[in-house]
Image (tube, rainbow, N blue to C red):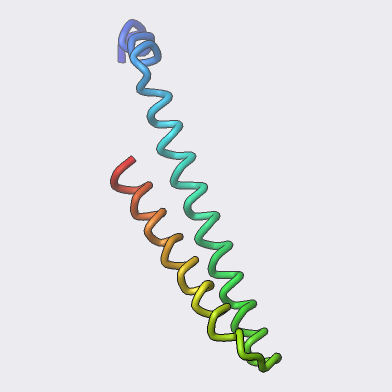
Length: 79
């Protein structure tokens, strides 16, 4: 690779785009891991505590995992 091509790639903004893509993928993976951990904790709480709102909390936890998966797919393919 020529030194001029390297400088041109810095000036054209390719480095910023790659940095943005990598950071969005990393943040989406972290959010998905967070959602999975929260889901496991909700499952443990549901087994331990019996309440009428357990179904709602489990539903919110499932929605959070779904959002995490959609975010990961979005960051992998569309960003």
